[in-house]
Image (cartoon, rainbow, N blue to C red; front, side):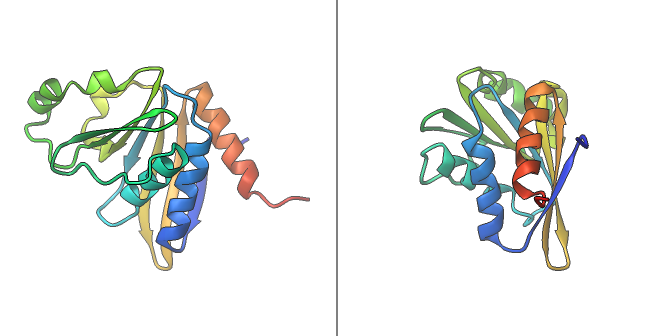
Length: 159
C-alpha cells in the first residue's frame, strides 16, 4: 500500500461524508491534524467526524480555541488559527490534556502548533482545486496507516 492517500471532494457534502467515514473508524486516542488554507473544508470534515461519533452539533472553536463534545467518544476540537503568541497560549490551554486514549483530538491549523502535537498522528492536508477540494492523508504511525488503508479500500476500484 502507498503511504498516503489523496481524495477529491466536489462538495461540502462529500467532504462531510469523508469525515463521517473517518469518524466511524476511530476507537479512541487518535490525533487528527488538519492543515490547509481558509475555506478548504477542515471544519466541514470535522463535523463529519463528530456526526460519526454521535455529536450532532459540532462547530468551529475559533473563539474559544478548544471545544469538548461527548458522543461515543469524547471529541476535542482545537482551532490553532488565532493562537498568538503560540507558545504562551499553548501552555495556557492545556492542549496536552486532549491527547488521551479515550478521546479523539482534531486540530485545525495544526501546522501552527506541530511541535506540541505527538508525532504519531493522522495528518490531512486540504487544498483548493478547480472543481473542489483535495484531501491528502499522511499517516504517522501504525494505527494511522491501518486507518488510511481502510479508507483506500473504500474508494479504490474493485477488480
